Length: 261
Image 1 (cartoon, rainbow, N blue to C red):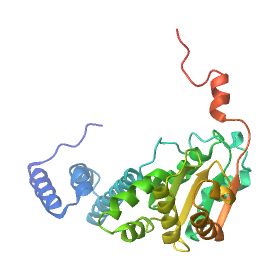
Image 2: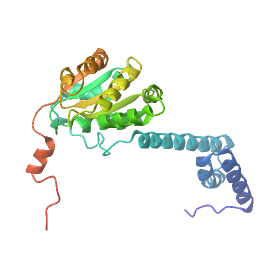
Image 3: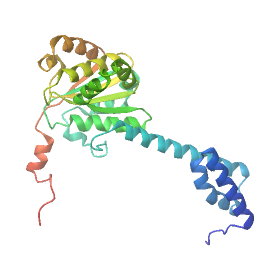
Image 4: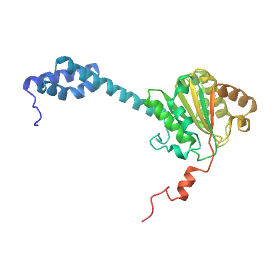
């Protein structure tokens, strides 16, 4: 079928609608209005239907934009989602994986600690949960433990450390990745404690760690470790991973690279 051609009256109306939408910042109505006006005329839509279609386009467009903005602000490291997650390769039970993906624990302001050896899927799982949370409308932030130390140093200069961590704790879910992989500086230990304290019983934290939290006193001052673990574990789910590194298995099977010609 040949597309309907705009009549002179249509062109004038479309131009005015586009101009008004630009003033009102209705980006998605502005983008859709030329096609909708022509379609409405060709199919003899009721005016209310045309209005509904345009408003739906605006709402859906803003929802998509909001999700993408939240995804950018989260600063995820690798773009790993549940689409690339292979449930059967994880040592975590399927029932536990499904429960974590439900995000019910986040709505209850509970914490998650995923502890186990390197390469057993801890970071992938937490990033997948983070992306899924964003898709569900949650605000998510991703940090390494040294990022928290950087925040401490930056805000200590003007004595705004408490304010900075209160702002961080306003996020629905904050992920701290790879605790125990490298030595933890005193600033990073303080930052981790301050985040746990600020989020306590208010927001959810998710940690990946090579060391069970009971051993955090090997990584930092025992006084800080004790206070941190006490608050972290009060409302926490602890999930343990084991087995050989998935990355090493893939490398040994020749799946880590494209074969050379």
